[in-house]
Image (tube, rainbow, N blue to C red; front, side):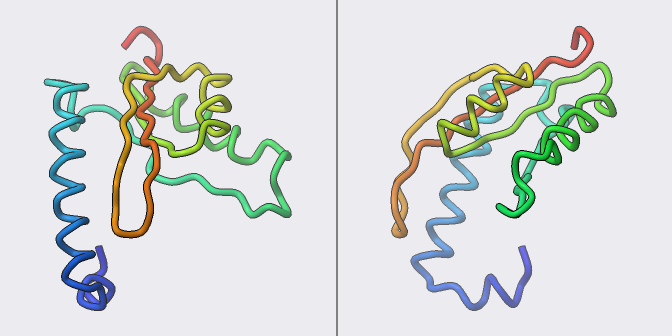
Length: 118
């Protein structure tokens, strides 16, 4: 994370982010075990609404899976609609949990896709 941005956050926000990252790390370790760090992770794909429904995100996601070859591709999403879209590309839900933050609550959905028999 950019240091200037980090320094601009309140103490409450920095504490929450630190705890969230620690919790996410534990959860991912439980999910992936020895594979953790060897899988590909999709961190963020977003399409400008003007360009949505043209296949751009689908093309990027498929290309990442093609490049990943014989491994696991993982991601997390917070929207049911997006999770359904990833399922249409062959991803499976692994787990989900409710996240509570000072800025609102959401469901975190972790999904994976085994590529070529990973």
